[in-house]
Length: 466
Image: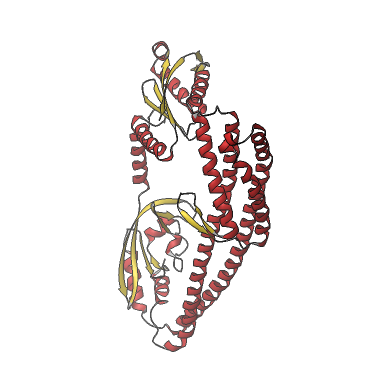
């Protein structure tokens, strides 16, 4: 970048000394349209948040209907007075109450429970098509609720009445789910239609704001005729610094860069002036990220200092590539919490996850299980084929263990030939036993280690919480 290019870029933001009143009108309209655009953006965001909330609650109705159906099925098979029956009755009451409260909140407006457990107010749906579907769903639900109410008080009703109530649920719950699914889809369609309308208004407003911005810039170009020397001196200072450095104004528009910056971001043959700093640096909760010309990204450290030049506030930013530092930090973190041989979580990470899952299980009244495993015959393979073969065997065992359980379960290696598996949200000890049997079956199959078939076994202990 030549000094001439830099000074012309900087001069765009030097206050003019002629025709100042002439630019007030386009500046006023630019600010006005920008404010309107921001207000529309707020409306769009709020509208989307409300729609997402309504759609999420509507989707939950499908799940509640399924829970009612499952609870009914369990009641038909559970022994009278058993724990299983009590749990099913509680599940049925909770699901019915929440479904009923939410459905009538959609219909009449009212308070219900959000997915996170907090109470929220749902206004009555004003979507014509959605209300048609909702009316049918409300009618069907009133009919179903009368029969559902008989199930918790089975002693008050004849067996034939209970069987009839069960048959009604089996027949109409799928139809109710279909109605709620149609209702959700109609909410989505209505939300998209209204959002598209608001986005169109946004586009028009921002286009008008951009036109006024162009007018302001053109008038500034016409009036600017001095301060060349200061701009040239500043460009020389910037280009003399080896550290990557960017000068930009309060709008984020880049005024000048040095060669180190162009080399770092891959713009050696293209000037960066008139671009926005956001094209180079993106900041989020994880820190700052640099974006190269080819679209690749890398972690950076950004130091920014505000300065005043020609009575205009600007920012000078130094940018340092910290990719290698971040990679080293990630490697150290992985070494601290993962087994270097198998890549599985180690004892420390397993303990942390176990503590977290126990607290989660207590809070949400769920269950979990821990499988402790020890390989049978591993020492013989290690002694007979060597330590390298033993390492390969441990790696393959780790892969088979991961294939034997669910993706959200944790498979860890504690050391030697000891492994553990943390099974979360498990319904019963029988489910844990089935997974253990699957593991035994997979481990009992032959392993191919350096073209030699070996066979080992595995011993498994199971601990259940609570």
